[in-house]
Image 1 (cartoon, rainbow, N blue to C red):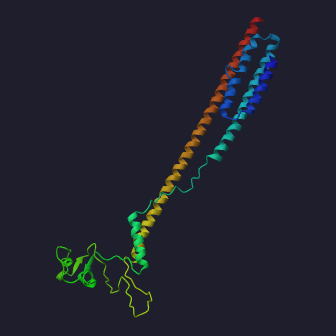
Image 2 (tube, one colour; image 1 turned 135 degrees about the vertical axis):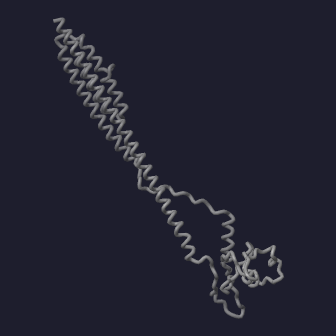
Image 3 (cartoon, helix red, strand yellow; image 1 turned 90 degrees about the horizontal axis):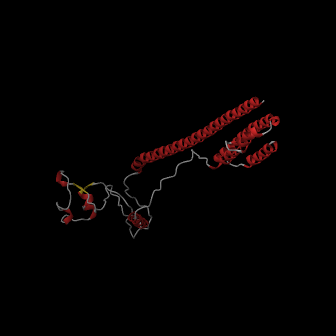
Length: 284
């Protein structure tokens, strides 16, 4: 019987040392310390041992059980620490990392063609300008050499405003942009004079208007991205916290289960010892 206890002890120590996961360690604990484990079967067989050796073998078996329980507990702590370090090394999340940027997409083919045409005409000395929605008759017709009897000046072809002598009208969608300041929007060259390329253009809107429109949009965009990154960071932090809480709860359940099994097994061992001692007392 003592030889069997020594074999169980040697085998348990070797296999516990080679266990690499919590599940494998738990399977070994059931194999050696469970209700149908090797040590439990030996304890049940103590009743068949001669009375002179029964107390010695029972005490040795109980000490072995305590030693194996401590061995399993120590190995479990080592495996849990290794598991935590592995998770921290391989599954960590940088909550301060900016979130993925939203792709902007592509320009429409018509926009690409329009920009290319504008670039070509710009290289030839022309300029792209924007004019007012309401224009005077002079800048809309006379300055563009449109005669007074042209059909475009008819009442049913042009939207005139109710002013004195109908001097203001809505600029037609296909109408040209005049030069209210008197500066030509298309450069003119005099063949008798050398070209200096010092042209002046009327550009609308002005830089101040562009900045007034773009700066609020830029600020709104930056704030929107900050909110997205903040929400993503909060979501990541909650995921990490929930994962850690789940792991901690699992560890607590395993520890409580181990303590429950240890107490239960200790009670069974105590009952077996009392029954054996009572039997010996009755036989003696």
